Length: 430
Image 1 (cartoon, rainbow, N blue to C red):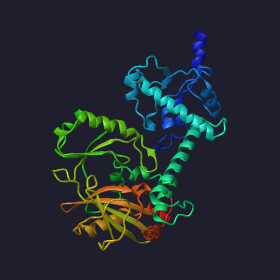
Image 2 (image 1 turned 135 degrees about the vertical axis):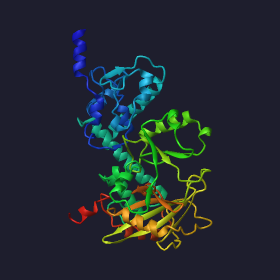
Image 3 (image 1 turned 180 degrees about the vertical axis):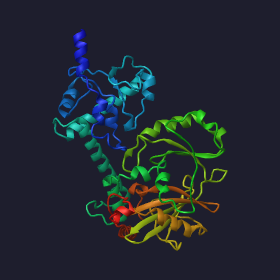
Image 4 (image 1 turned 45 degrees about the vertical axis):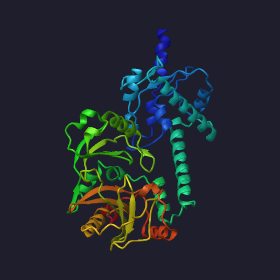
């Protein structure tokens, strides 16, 4: 028995290491439900290892009727947290081998459901790709990227009503989609996250631009984190979009529920490219709106580089984004355009020209240096201009342009290249 146990231990393979192979150099990983579930891979007793290693073994494994249910270490670099599973299965957070799930209470059935979904995913994978000795993690990553690409193009066709030309993109919308699907800008982790963007700005910080205060940065939040904050503040994720919460009356907030929502969604939050970030955190940030919770107008500057000339800039104003959302677009002289991008309604009453408009245009042109196209978001509060964020993927390429003529004109302004950002000195040959 001792010999058999030692032999089993020697031949057991750490699945988490296999899943991380080839991906460990990337700070932002493809979101792959199959890969994440592979951390809790099913063990095939006949092979005495922690799951199928390649497509051949995967096919054998799927034929097995008797399945062990092991749990393994989850690589935190891939955006998963073990806390949820640790409490329910008594697995230590730093376990390196596989441990069989002894009891199926306290959430184990949920885990079995996820394992079944992973098994189904592998079945579909084998239908699409021949059974070979290709490493399974490579096949899964490749298939996930294929799926994402196909789904993104299908959504684009449904939203815009035409099939995009991704080989020779000419329209603004086509170039946006091409960027999302193909551009792996190494600088994106610096300018594309709300936590790092202020640091990216420090080397190009123009006069007159302010940064909202960050009170706290947390990997996970608990009700005890809310005790020493001002009356009004904002919770938001540092990466991706759609996870934020404005608090102006803390007493009326269910903190347990709010914390659970953020902690559950944060690790798997994605950006427009379908990537998740292992370093995603919760920011407690200064609230720039009014005491009653109204958010300020959002000034979005679409900046198109013009090769040595001042950039072409279009101004988008969004009002009440989380309520009765209204939007209008203007040229640099604040003339209203018959242009819309997306489904938001136009302002019934047009906003007045902001006093700081010229200064915001100047700031946008300055901080957009090095980008072929970038959207710069700013706020104007009581005479002060605040930085919002950089966005290279406007509306995830899913916002239809109001006419093909405008789609073509915006595309002509865009001298498209990859990656999106190149340092100005590097572009000049220094």
